Structures are given as structure tokens and as C-alpha cells.
Length: 281
Image 1 (spheres, rainbow, N blue to C red):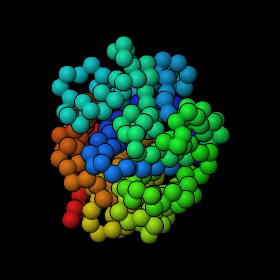
Image 2: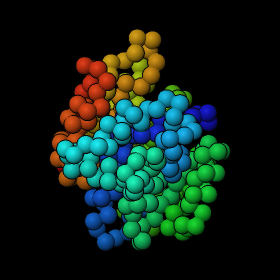
Image 3: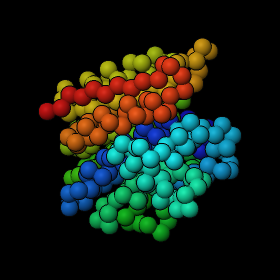
Image 4: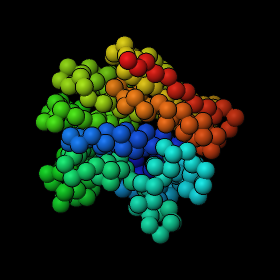
């Protein structure tokens, strides 16, 4: 929805899961010399302040990235993720949190390209200002990311990582994600597509993983992180999931170490847990 501002939730448990996976995907996919395109359909802002503004209101980062910040026992995948957050906080004090575009900017190479879309008028303006001097390497556009995805596929390099993570405040987002993936597969089946979704008490959310698995019979990875039991009033986020089409083959092994750790360290009650399943060729 156009009212959604991610700044309220920056650095929370869902961001930790999404961005830890994103860092691993970018690290694996930039090992080949051929240029990579990163497409972010719902980019939000590139960076969020954690010590002022929206993030301070609910301080969700305190039960997310802050719980990892001072740990010295992080599994490699989570250490890689925290290292990228530290790049924005060189004095060692957690004040800023990168959005997905900033993670990509830090990890992509000179030959790679970043294409971002954001529909919210304020967020898109901030995003365009942030990247105004980085064209043509990085281009931010105000508009519908689902439509934008159609315009950039297939990429000239024939290598792409696509992140799709709408707010899902509008239940129609679930249908739009599925439609966008079906269209993307027709345009560019070889792309790597990473979908984030919330664990909430909504029928669409519960049915979503099974619908995603129907997109292709093999080459998918599905993971979830639950941090607490669902609220009694039916509202709120109790976890989140990631579904990846055509994942790098080394990714499951990295997550097998990271997910149990996250379920323990980010747990908010005894219902915390994780899942990891795949169907790989």
C-alpha cells in the first residue's frame, strides 16, 4: 500500500532474514566475471536511520540486527551480513541500517547493474536522490515494480538476481507476485528470483508457499524464520519466509548453519523456529 513506510520496521527480524539471504546470493552470483543485473521491485529507501525518525517509534531493530551486533559466534553467512551493516557504521555504533539497494551497491562490481523501483512517492524521491550520481550503473525509478520488472527482463547480460518483497498490506500483492513470477519465467527462465513474504494470520499468507512451489517442480529453495507465536488478536508479524527460484547450489549449506542460530538468538518466545526445504536438480 502507498501508506507503508519500511522505516518503522528497519532492521527487524524479517530484515535480518531477507538481507542475510540477499548478501549470500550477491556474493555467490558475483563470483563469475560476467555482469550481473540486480533488480529490486519494491526498493524502499537505500538507508534507514535507527537513532531518529520512524525506526525509533517501535525500535524493532532491537529484536533484530541489534541482537547480532556484538556477537562473536556468528555463523559465516550471518557474519557476512553483519559485516555489510558495519560498513555503514564504521565507528562500531549501530545507527544506520542499509536497505536492499544499499546492500547491493556495496556488493556489486563495476560491471554489474542495479535497477530499482519504488511506488511510494516519498520513498521513491529519496531513492532517486540517493542514487542520482550512480547512473547508468544504478538507476532508481518511481513506479510499479511489477511493471518495471517486465521492462528489464531479459537483461542484456543474461544474468540477473530479482528481489520481490512488497509490503503485502494489500492481500492482492500475493496474486501479483505469482503473476509477476510466471511472466518473468517466460521472459527469462534462467534468472534467480528471491521472494520475501510475511508470516501473518491471513489465508493468503498461509497458502502462499504451496502456490510458489507450483511455479516449477525443481530448482527452488524455501526457508522460514518464526520468532514468536501468532498474536491472539490476529494481528502482527510473527515471522517471515524466503522463496528462491534457481538458487545457487551452495546456498542451502550456508543457511543450514545460519537458520538454527537465528531461531535461537532472535526468539521472542518458545514458539520460535525455522524451516528449510528444497527441490534442487
